[in-house]
Image (tube, rainbow, N blue to C red; front, side, top):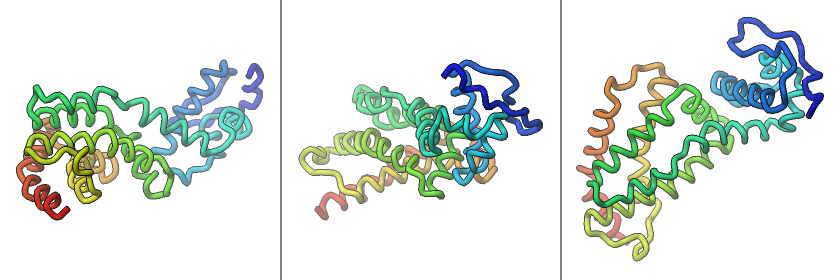
Length: 229
């Protein structure tokens, strides 16, 4: 890609995006495009045009397409950067650590999870993805369901002396219980970055209270669901 920067245009001022004033090595140019795309899609959503993104970056649209041949390719890269790169493999394992109370495990997980996702770009891109029907949020939610919520299900059943999911498979209705907990935590980010409402002053206190509320009310509902099976 030695000559990829042949299509640099005059930089655009007062956009908040770095201007392309000089030729960059391919790796730096790619990094600039990805970082700019993350900011751009977080600001305007996925209806935003690559032509406008290129203009803000101070490059031509053909140059952008040399790095990312289609808009979907660029969106896939945004997904990898914003979502997959922040995923921590220790989250599911930490939830399985029965030397720690389930409440403390959930609080520990959601505190770390919140620290990883609660920012402008993560939350707004996720919301725009859902509204536009882009696959980003669906792909990510599948990971959360399979690697987090199903683990919480197994651990809660163990805590309550209920059948293991290997003996009694998890139903959609049961998973919905855990989505309610996940959604309560995620809503903090929505309040701040979508509704411009202040988040709780102490996120850890909020998480602890939310987890306790969930654990305090879930048992009778869970038993009813399992008995109906």
